[in-house]
Length: 111
Picture 1 (cartoon, rainbow, N blue to C red):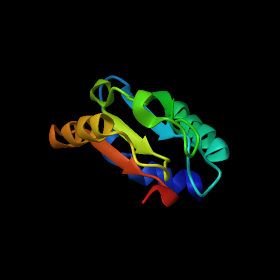
Picture 2 (cartoon, rainbow, N blue to C red):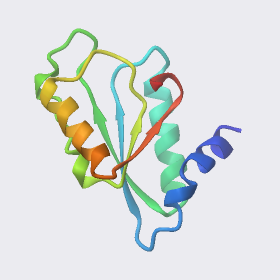
Picture 3 (tube, helix red, strand yellow):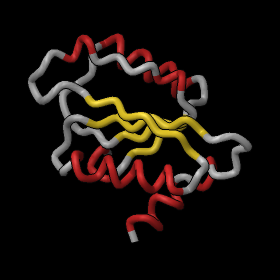
């Protein structure tokens, strides 16, 4: 069932002519992100329609100032993240990415 659920989330991206670059953001979550991120990555890669990178934040309570994924490099960002607030610079970059039409998928506990 999990694979089916993820398939529906990515339906709008499936028809791309070249693989869509996807960034999974993880590192903190009240669910086991160390288990779910590899599953999400496997599902996406198995389709042959995506390339996948992972950006892992510092652990809870860590210094978030250096956590600065370059969202603009990706067609979609999958949030498998539920933790400390990002730095102002990272939040602004993410807001700009979304305003400019970047895709976002919020996975389970990341909502």
